[in-house]
Length: 118
Image 1 (tube, rainbow, N blue to C red):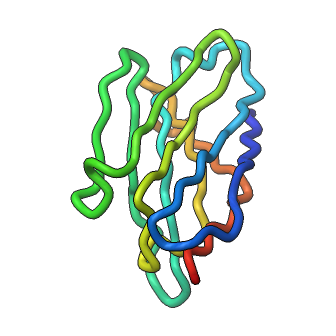
Image 2 (image 1 turned 30 degrees about the vertical axis):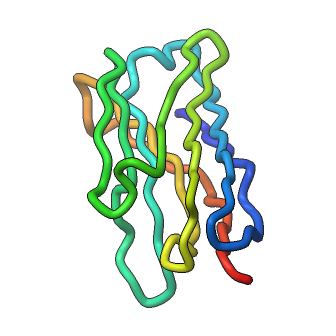
């Protein structure tokens, strides 16, 4: 069992920045692909950014160039740096961990609210 705890959400004005953090409670964090998802009201949860165990990253088209995902295996942490935020980025952001060879080992955090509004 892996517990994920997100932090760093809040209210920010359009054009502003936030950095989300996700702390993972596992001694084998380096064996998990990590991702950030978001879900806005009445919308499905969607992938925002992911990073593999090898450090390869991918992004949704809507955030590419504005968001950056990173991980620190020594600290069991994954981050999402969000710049140039827009109103449409408003959502609950969730951290996800999926074992790199056992995808059934799939875990979610409780989510953190990001609101972009003036």
